[in-house]
Structure formats: structure tokens, C-alpha cells
Length: 75
Image (cartoon, rainbow, N blue to C red; front, side):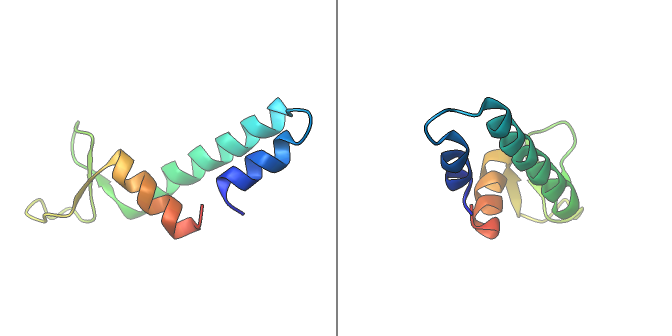
């Protein structure tokens, strides 16, 4: 189920704020854990790398990783 579909089912006729908050929290935690398990933060920058090889050109911004995560998880 996509993130949008999860929110749509939570909202229905009456918005269930607590359920929406839970969906958002689970998504944020899942994304953070996925980043931590698959990429390395490059110092104090906003860039992430696939390996600790600093000569590797595979650098990603957090926004780019979010899009990769959403595609990978089918969200």
C-alpha cells in the first residue's frame, strides 16, 4: 500500500489524526533506518555515499535517497 493510500484510508470521512501521525512516524523511522543500513553520511554534510570510499562518485542528497526509498518500497 502506498503512503498516499495509507493516508486516504486513515482519513475517510473523519480525519483520524492519531492514525495519520502513526503512519508518518512509521514512514520516517523506516526511511531513517534504511538510510543508516545502506548509506554513510559524509561528515557534517547533507550528502550520503554508498561506501566509505571517498573517491566514489555515488553521492546522494537526503532528498534523492527519499525518492530511491519510496521507489524501492513501492510508496
